[in-house]
Picture 1 (tube, rainbow, N blue to C red):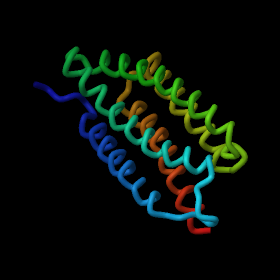
Picture 2: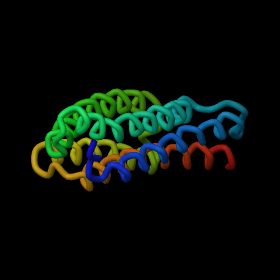
Picture 3: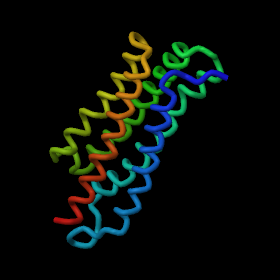
Picture 4: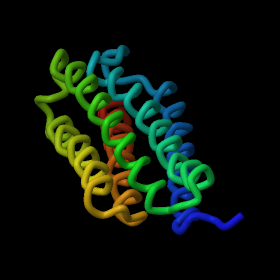
Length: 160
C-alpha cells in the first residue's frame, strides 16, 4: 500500500503531542505559591492534556482517511474540514472556561485566544483552498503551541 505524502511528518507531530501530554504529569507534582492551583491554572493543566491528545488523533486522521479513500487530496480536505469543525467547538468551550476565570486577563491567556482561532482558520482554509500537508501540519503545530504555552505558564506559576 502506498503511503500518504507527509505521513512521516504527521506521525512525528503525533509523537511530539504524546510527549507533551506526558509532560503534564510534571505539573501535578508542582505546588504553586499558596499551596493550591487557581481555577485558571487547573483549566490550563486540562488544556495541555486535551489539546495534546487532540493533536495526536488529528495528526492520524489524514493518514487513516488516505488509507480509506486512496487519494491524498480527498483525505486532506475531509480531515481538514472535520478538524476545523471540531477545533471550533473546542475553542468555544475552552473560551467559556477561560472567561469564567482570570485566565483571559494575562498575556498568555490573550495569546491563547489568538492561537486557537488561528489553528481553526488554518484547518478551514486547508479544507477549502489549499489541501496541503504543510498547511495541515502548520495548523497542528499552532494548535500544539496552545499546550506548550499552557505548560510553560503552569510551570512558571509554580516557580514564582
